[in-house]
Image 1 (tube, helix red, strand yellow):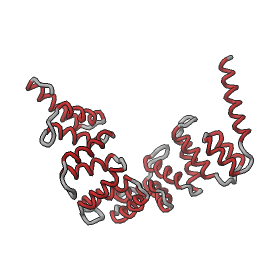
Image 2: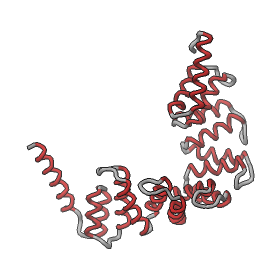
Image 3: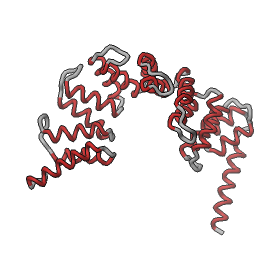
Image 4: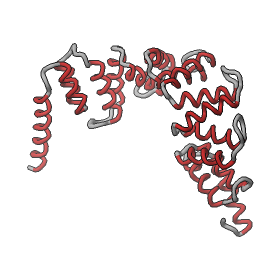
Amino acid sequence: MKKIMILFVVLLAITVIFAQMPEKDQEACEYARKHDNVNLWLEYLKKFPEGSCIAEAQFSLGLLYQEGDGVQQDPAEAFKWYKKSAELGNIHAQNNLGRMYFQGESVPQNSAEAFKWYKKAAENGNTQSQYNLGVMYVNGQGISKNFEEAIQWFLKASKGGFAAARNEIGIMYYFGEGLKQDYQKAAKWLELAAKQGYAPAQFNFGRMTFNGEGIQQNYAEGIKWITKSAEQGYMKAQITLGAIYTDGKVVKQSLAEAKKWFKYAADQGSDKAKSYLLKIEEAEKATGKNK
């Protein structure tokens, strides 16, 4: 009896929501946007098949199905709604559709198709897609390798404040790929991204500061940035910190601290970290110490 009552209450609540949906297109869109659930967006599409918010409704449905928000997670259903929205020009749906093709999520992996959708979104100002296009040009995925083209898309994304793109520009200056090698410019771009909290950039900038590349050498400052990165789970930073504490040249040697960071990286699957951990443990056994 209790289960029947609960079901009745749920059905009644859904009925009330539908009953409250305004009769005018834009007002109904605002109402669905505010409450944001699958049933309301489906109701909107049913009531306004040529409404002003169709692409947004379809994108929202894709997102809800992708994340399993209030509905069972269903990548295939998410793909279906993203594609409908993307075809109507929604840049967020185009980006997500590109990602699903790129990763082979609910559809066969297809880099060329991913590139096509990323490019549509990128050309209309989606910074995530601009960054994704740059990465595809760097790696030659879905398109021929082209560092010059990659840098143009990274620059567009960076103007929108996209930290990952700023990190890539820094890396390209560092290695001289698509840009003339320049450590000072590399450090400036990496610092911008690091200050935004982007873990790979924090590691890269920290390493340059630690080594004095393109910026005045400062061990303490370098370790600070590497630590920030490691604390976010960035494996390279964790291994580097472990090595710094094992070495004990610029900080007081602490095998306990070294083991802590190596273990974090090992737990993420790093064979290098596992090897370092084993060496420390063997050395401790040999000396009878456990620092």
